[in-house]
Image (cartoon, rainbow, N blue to C red; front, side, top):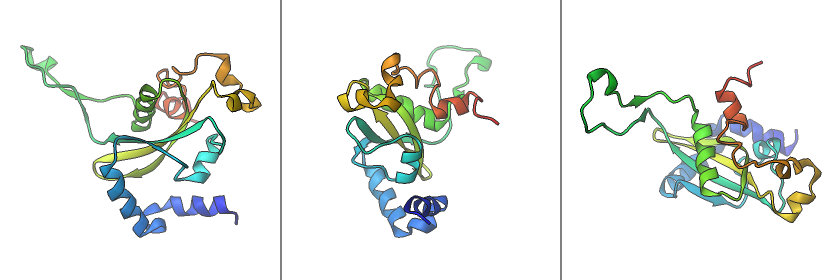
Length: 173
């Protein structure tokens, strides 16, 4: 059994597999900002399977998204009761929202993919893999040539990442 398969086994039941580390991370991450750039992925096996490489031009972010129903701000002017609703049922999943927020924060980078890291009663945390398409190391990589082919910063907003395709029903077998 290799190192990546052992990491994968631990993350199948992270509360039991990580033990006290789970709680410590949860307490520390709650105090952090909603978008945090990190040095290396928390789940190395998942990041590698989604395209992460430990080379220049790759950036990892931890994005926090609040859980719960999505609400529109309360209407202050007159409406008939039928049109007064403030509850929203978004067609986007939380992972897609996290990717969009990361893309808005880092305009020069392109979202490659993302994966779940942690959740509690208030927040979800996702780690997002971003790539700098103008970095010389990325330009020289044959597998990432598609980043230069088109304007890729809008991939997230058009539902073209893995989470976006899942939300649009394109990943069903």
